[in-house]
Image 1 (tube, rainbow, N blue to C red):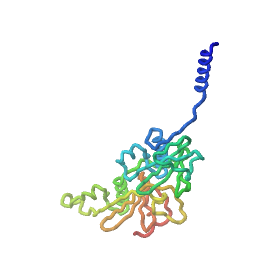
Image 2: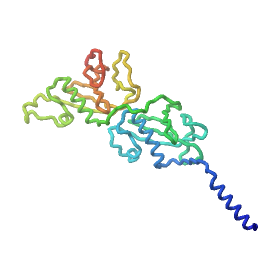
Image 3: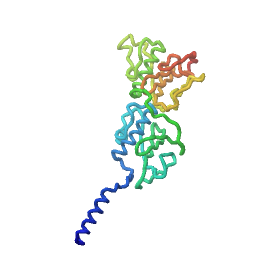
Image 4: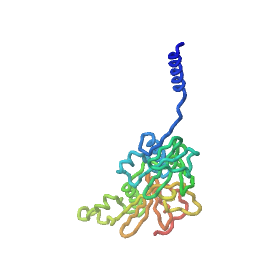
Length: 276
């Protein structure tokens, strides 16, 4: 075999060996909105939505538009995590905005809802998703809660008005439309006694399922944050305070800091307290 032929055989052998050797599993990270990264962040948003009771869940596309068509204010931001030295944790190093590394990376996702900020961390598999506060991991539950579609503030106010109409035995149902444009007695004599109604509503993230108006007496609640509406109705000068959960299935008339026995979606055994 000539020298040139031997060199050609050697070069071909080296090329074959190099081709068979697997390349290192490099995971360079740059904080840009790529499809794979959006999928991971969407998983975090999904679990967060379950935690608070938002349905349908939040997702990156609608938040990125900056025109959230929801009855609350929400946003998110994210950073890379350096996971080369260990699994995802609340102390994992946060990467610089333009930093690229070779090795294991993850995400730090900050979600803001109605001014309240939540920090979550995860890896490239979105498992696990951990919640952090002041650098420490805290218990949380991002599993589905069985809460249906989120209603808006006007719908929640109408629900509260319907309940109050029955509670006060008005003989007619007050609504947002009638409050905004009350009927004139001259147009219909039957409306002479239509009450003067004023209302306001605010979407609120409550600390637990009591919605800021607990029963007391040792009653325990789901400790997950809960999205609801705080609605104030003024009827003929009397003020009534309501909490309506964001799916409309809990309608709580709060009197004297406790839920009235007529509230819907609660198991109340105690006698209703005095009016506010």
